[in-house]
Image (cartoon, rainbow, N blue to C red; front, side, top):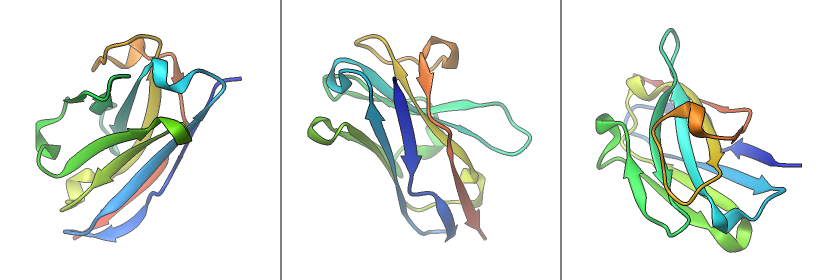
Length: 124
């Protein structure tokens, strides 16, 4: 059974940092791309970052460039989203998802499995 479990969310003040984790199981982790998405209150789900199986990162949201990074530890079947200089506009539920393919995509419908999400709240 494919499972993705996010953790690391919480409440943080503006300017602070958080590291989200996405622990995967049930598939050959290092064969596929993993993406991070977020859904802010009242907004559509948006792609944030993705990491290919080769470790190449792709940004899909300009506002996080220079503040967020994605990395993966294939030995631990885990992908991380390091978030720094957080802003209230980053408040959202963050989801990780796996795409059955080598390359990344910013299109949520191309992803095959999703985690349950973790809430990130940034106070001003």
